[in-house]
Length: 135
Ligand SMILES: [Zn+2]
Ligand SMILES: [Zn+2]
Image (cartoon, rainbow, N blue to C red; front, side, top):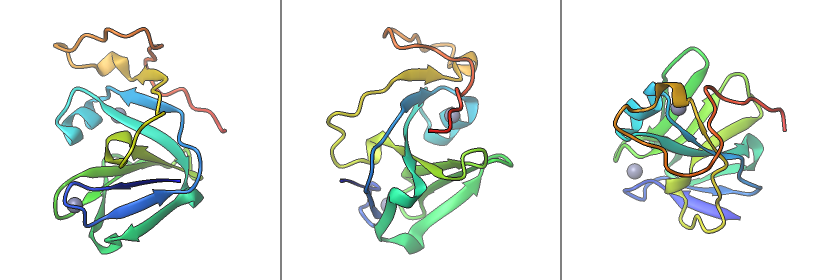
């Protein structure tokens, strides 16, 4: 089981199942929301996610009709992402995990909207959008 938290430590969570696939997302909304050239999320089963502290501070923002991004209302850390097309899944930011040992990103997604100044230098596959699967 993996655990994670926001920066201020108010929100804590546990993931009781596997995490993956893990992708680097270069979409314009992740870039703005995270203030970074890409975000890194791992897919989990929603039923495997347990909030163990601070649930009252978890705030959702619908960045589009299909997407809700959740973050800590106190410190702003981005924790989760859900997409209406994947109702059984949730995505967790790998950098909010307490220990990300063994987490292996598999691909870059939404590279069509990548930051112009950022050059992808690894050999991972690059996708224009999100390769939806129903795993
Ligand atoms: Zn926080
Ligand atoms: Zn994105």
